[in-house]
Length: 260
Image 1 (cartoon, rainbow, N blue to C red):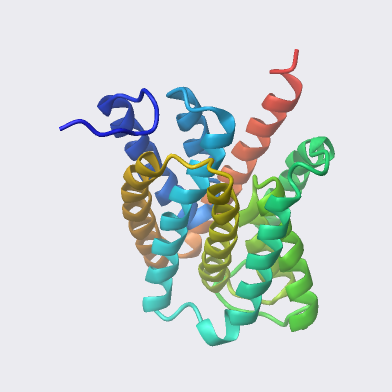
Image 2: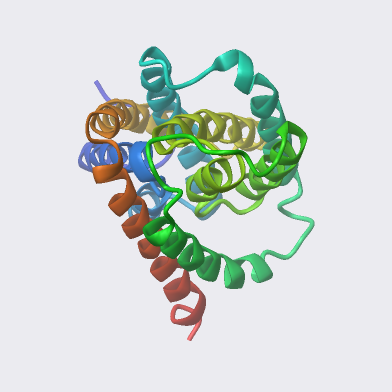
């Protein structure tokens, strides 16, 4: 029985995409940055950029949902307390996706790698990065505003969103490391879902390819969240730093070398 994947994609390529999604889901559930794996994989098999972005958002929803579900079952997410933030990041991400064609993203492409470097070194050396919560710098309104800006950024551009969410929750919200990771996954699920709906409305998602990848994403995210809970700061901190620096290198390479 043959399946129509929406374009000329072999079964071997689909298996490759499922494997890439599994690895991305595992890494993303602990440190973010899964899109660095899945988007190049989608482009590698010949999927056009806009459809690659839309399909990536669709399958990413399953990974962030799987991680969020596992963290919630383990008691690391307070849905009632987070509901307002979820609504804010959902709406702001949708607005960001709608604004993609209205603004230039060149400035963001140049700035984000350096912001990721700052984030990585903050995460590496800051004494605040522990399992325990600390005193919040901002109240709910201020934190909601910052999270809303990150949500808009995810819908508009995207790279490093998980890292920026964690940084905001730890540095400004006073969250402990595991609590910040859990809530970052929940908020990232909301931003992915909002952006995915915009791409779906525009007809830019290969649904069957996305569903196949979603299997790998969900499995990888479930395993990754278990590892994060089991090992805590020992694995989260170094992996977040490595992923952030890898994202930085990836973005700098695309910005300064592929254009030569």
